[in-house]
Amino acid sequence: MKRKLVALAALATASALVLAGCSSDANESTDTAADNSGKTITLWLAGGDTPDELRDYLKTEFNKETGATLDIQQQDWGDLVTKLTTSLPDANNTPDVTELGNTQSSTFTNVGAFLDITDMYDELGGDKLLQSFVDAGKVGDKNYALPYYFGSRAVFTRADVWAAAGVALPTTLDEFNAGVAAINAANPLNIPDFSGFYLGGQDWRNGISWIFANDGELATVKDGTWTSTLASENTLVGLAQLQELYKSASNAPNDAKDSNQYIYLNDSDEIKDAEGAVTASTSLSAATIMAPTWAHWSIGTLGTDADGKPTRTWDDTKNAVFALPGNDGKPAPVFAGGSNIGISATSKNPELAKSLLKIIFSEDYQTMLGTNGLGPANSDYVDSLGDDQFATALIESASNSKLTPAAPGWATVEGSMVMEEFFSKIEGASDLKALAEEYDEKLTPMLNGE
Image (cartoon, rainbow, N blue to C red; front, side, top):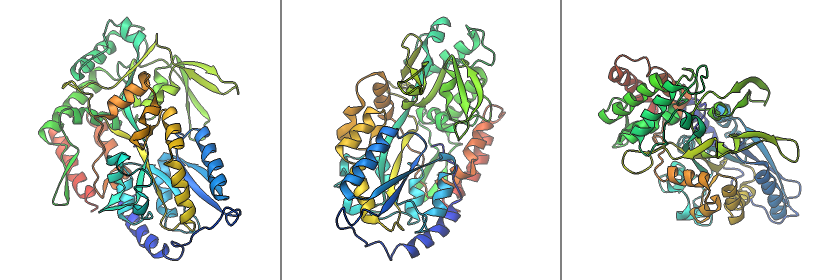
């Protein structure tokens, strides 16, 4: 997911501190709500995906059930892992419970950063929990992090621009590739720097769908050793399709990643920095994007709610959403978004932290996730997503979604920005195979934590 990570070596060093520091308080327990009245635990949430309504619910229910106070602190995705790496080993500064990206889980669990919660697995959902996320949070047969919510990437379009270009919505990946190129060439509204498909030059998280759709892989594992496979035959087919899309369908900047592409579908919008300050204005400049399905809350006509806060109202006459189609009658495989959640191994209040997990995995909270467009971790509550077009797109795209390789060094790969670097060279590459081989040599030792 959109994460700026630190080197695995730093995490390995941190793990020694984690393991050394987690023994003294690990068995501390709480007795009654009255006993906890002066205690506070901290929950780190990543980014703004968890709505205020859910945060307030957690605070209220946690205090009601334990008598203690829940302090929720939001962390930016960009430096989350850097902060976790320095904070988790420090019992005085660690978050008691933290959200982290599903692709980050394997690195942290393998270095001992989280508390073993195997004894809670069945109580928190067991086999009903999203298993690919469960696996990312396991070491051997022990559970250390469990899924918080899942998302999946879908296609969002300006259906009115597609219609103006005379292009029908696609039913296959080949039709999609041809359609966005045709729209880009037609540019029916004569928009400067228009993209039939806005795909940033460094947007590997969306771009890998074309690799997966052609039965390619980023890496494979044999006897515990990981090998980067960018130069494999099927992966190269997907890379060739991406190169053509970059050339014929997208005018997105070469340094653009997968952040807030939806603003380019709106008639007007704003670019904001991490503090929420407006840094630039935008206008309609793309007919198509890919984004997590909860992006629909940010697409549509601008208005205000009862409190005067800006809102977007989806307009079916202008917009459409659907799962990226494959060529086999199924949705194309897309990167599975979402998060895991775990208890710090150095938490001074592990029993209170476990109480918080019980609330998070309760029916009420899982249902609240679904009604807010976030895929519940427990499959029993997926119906809470509803049956509208957004839920349909989420469920269909998630049905064939994939995670990045569960290699011990994947955090190092993301932290080094090597995938962004590789993707930024695809459009201009005269020899894609040579480029892929070059990066296979870089990635293979990184995947294995070397």
